[in-house]
Length: 540
Ligand code: G6Q
Image (tube, rainbow, N blue to C red; front, side, top):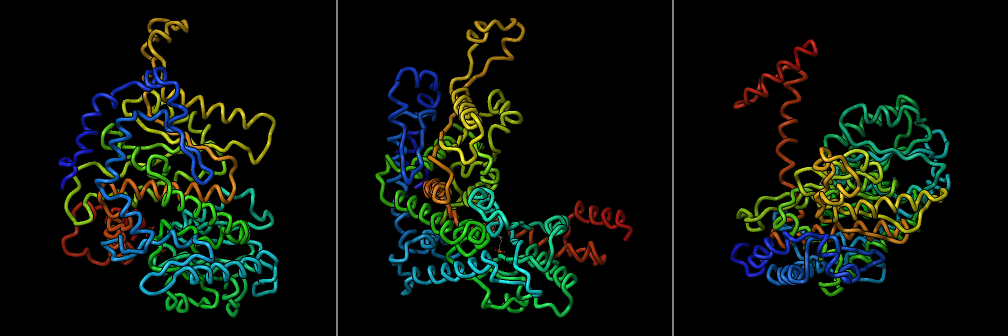
């Protein structure tokens, strides 16, 4: 069945020209209870979607879509460990990473929960040794600096979580994150560090990723340069990987390797051993609190009725905004400085997952799929790109996110921050009419410039306080939001074939750039010319 032959999809198409075209200003004025009715809570997270351009008919049709598209069956299949990542023939079990010790989840005859906790316990023991100073480097000095080397899913989660939980971190330690193959990244990360006090975590599921292995080798050279060729580098390197053979080949003691499983996708791995840097920074208890937050949201997603289910509703709203209101992007606006990398983290989670053009069976999708996610913390964004959100020609739905309690109490700064978040949400929804602008006394020639169309859909997501638990719940909220939208679209949200071709081509191009190797057969003229220009510019 194509999406357009589908009952609820057609119903939503019809509603697009009525409810979809309605003004939030009117919806809010005509139905004051809307603000209370369109408020749901789960795992300590509150979602206020009263400023989304929906009404009960749209919600009903979206919820009917859940049944028609088998979203709940797919959810249950994921939680049961079925191989729902069809193109890679894998289970999708990040939810197992946060199951409590006493739970059980049997996949292919093995209970994965004891395996998960075995790794968590090893990570805990190791983190304690590093944090207490018991783990020492080659010269006997304690470790003061932790540098995570990884990229994509092996970087974005760790760096986002480190920054988000900085208030809970060991402030006597320095944490750095190196991802880019651009040498600048590692040079700047380690220039002021003492190798004798530095521990590198080489985080790579495959342990073959070009950027990570290149940076790991550079780090090993730096340690040897600093501590001598005969230095015991094993004291300065640990690995997080599924590939023991490659880890050993690199010279890392596999006793100091923390494993995970092929059923953990890179962008769903920050709560696996990939989060080792997070655990060292906030301690094992903090990490377990974060896992508890993830699990609480998993349970909410698994058991809450659809109409009160946060990730399900957010996923459905994203389908409505993308496919029916024709909004190609979503802005994520956290009003919290600690969440400065949260939008970047969500970019990968959402776009690598749902940036797909064919369905599970390989047939082309017949709707739009994943929107572009982007954003910056408020209030900074207000002084930069909000102009386009307010008055540009594209409608950009926004997720405004804030915590009620500040972690840093500085006079009334937190109240000012939240006043800005709520003011922006109101302006997104209501805008400013011509009459209002005139009534404000604007000169006539400025009236059109000052009119704000409003009707920008917006969700306001709030949590009491930014804690490890809250961070886990928020990340799981978006993980399952992405899942829901992907299930409605009928795509595989867990593969990423689109990233392969460019990587393979770069490997082929490098020898051409470095040594002037002949161009491979069939190289396009633009690339050949660019290679020649680059070589000339480098005097080769
Ligand atoms: C995420 C992707 C990708 C991956 C990186 C790093 O879902 O698979 O971002 O995490 O390419 O891969 P390695 O961990 O294998 O180095």
